[in-house]
Amino acid sequence: MPSTVSDARAVSVQSERQSPDMDPRPRKNNFLAKWAAEFWRPVAFVFALVLLWWLVTAQKWVAPFILPSPQDTLRALSENGTYLAQHTGVTTLETVLGFVIAILLGELVAVLMVYSRSLEKTMYPIILFAQVIPKIAIAPLFVVWLGFGLEPKIWVAVLMAFFPIVVSGMAGLRSVDPEILELTSTMGANPFKTFLKVRLPASLPQLFSGLKVAATLAVTGAVVGEFVGANEGLGYVILQANGNIDTAMLFAALIIMSLLGILLFAIIQIAEWFLVPWQASRRTGGASTNG
Amino acid sequence: MTALLHEKRVTTTQPVVTIENLNITYSTKRSRMTALDGINLNVEQGEFLSIAGPSGCGKSTLLKVVAGLTAATSGQAQLRGQQIKGPRRDIGYVFQRAALLEWRNVRGNILLQAEMRGMDKAKAARRADELIEMTGLGGFEKSFPHELSGGMQQRVSLCRALLHEPDVLLMDEPFGALDALTRERMNIELHRIWRETGTTVILVTHSVAEAVFLANRVVVMSARPGTILETLDVPLGSHRDYAATMEDPDFVRVSARVRELLGASHTAE
Ligand SMILES: Nc1ncnc2c1ncn2[C@@H]1O[C@H](COP(=O)(O)OP(=O)(O)OP(=O)(O)O)[C@@H](O)[C@H]1O
Ligand SMILES: [Mg+2]
Image (cartoon, rainbow over all chains, first blue to last red; front, side):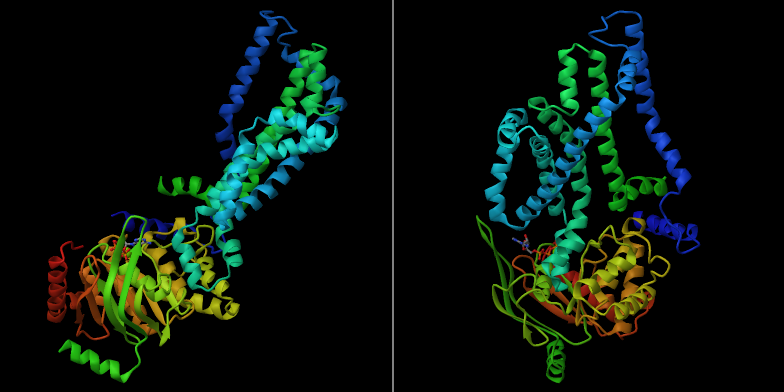
């Protein structure tokens, strides 16, 4: 019977944990091994791709102004180190600020809409409408309104990242077991306490999946903003390189941009491990105790 | 005769729960559905009451009325002589699914009750330790729900429901998801806990053996609309051994009658 089996499992968990304060989560070296096990495939794939890239350019199958060689791209990266670093800094700032504002606004709107049915009915259509307008079409408007500084880029990033945060935030807040809410109402808890101790933590797993999507969109938003009108940032670098038919530089900027997206994604992932440990341990730990 | 005995008890002490002519009607867009019809029920201080009945007859609804989570359409429902108007703080609730917070360990889940109520921290912690000991969860205080078996999760849920020493413990098919053996063990433990705490318990169950083994009285309900078919006294002592009780002629007789009543209103376990 399933329950007796799991009872036995729970007993074995106890015997493994002789000292009461031992952490059930995997140890450090274990952790590194897990990373290696998880990431060797994508790393090998990227390596193979670069190799193919090198082969194609070394054999001169395509012209260098169409596809620069890996070496040329690397040279563009290293020779323009400070130039690229400066513009990367600008784009990073826009992205991060846009993302943070989107999180604050998105979560606030999600909470309001979950708690008030009439607010949801009023705001949701507007938010949906704002979402379906192509952001590239809005970006010039933001430049007209906000000028050529950082603001329009930040707000395009906000606009891009906002929607997935609202949607995942709402879904998360709604995912609470209704019986738990009934239970807290018999505990005489005020709504704020229930929100803080039950609803908000219960919403985190779903919220984080939205944040991961939003993080990558925020990078896109900032660059789209720069395309429309800027004299700094990676979007600007790309436009300049394009104008000079400097494909190596263009590739360099592209690589930095994707690294920026990956970095932001990784930060969210790490934050998730810290803030939603029960989710991670259920995924990995659950499998290992059963197997 | 059972009615007579019952009357006598009512006159000596004030019942904890009093339900008179209770009617619950759910109205949906298309139809109106009477879930409970003309329910009269008293539950005495310290009593263990089991409720059995076919699926959908309104057992959960009845518990929710006592908890103040569902309002009476008509009739009276009182807890400790007070009209039940909104969610009641003086009850403990155990659901079929343990309904634990997965980000809190065993202790944290039990203490949620204390935090929400703003109970004295030290006192609540001491009480939690007692309950953990009493329910055999010792050594698992720091385990998270996904590391526990179904039976252990239900014990945590029970501890949480008992932490604030409620006047009435409401249990809605708490062991329905457990296998037969674990369920038996939980029955024995619940019986002991009931004896040790002296709490008034209302238990909804689909298991006849569980209903009779644990209870002072068993209420058998009919299918929609839910009415009380019969209330049976269980004339067994307050200290019951599981194996011996299963063979006890009174147990066998009452169980047979409950089965008969349930069979008559179709659907059994
Ligand atoms: N919120 C609700 N809205 C409308 N109808 C409801 C609602 N809650 C319960 N009902 C109906 O009331 C009836 C009684 O439901 P209840 O959950 O109390 O039954 P139950 O005896 O606990 O059944 P089970 O043994 O299957 O748990 C059912 O027919 C159900 O469909
Ligand atoms: Mg039910």
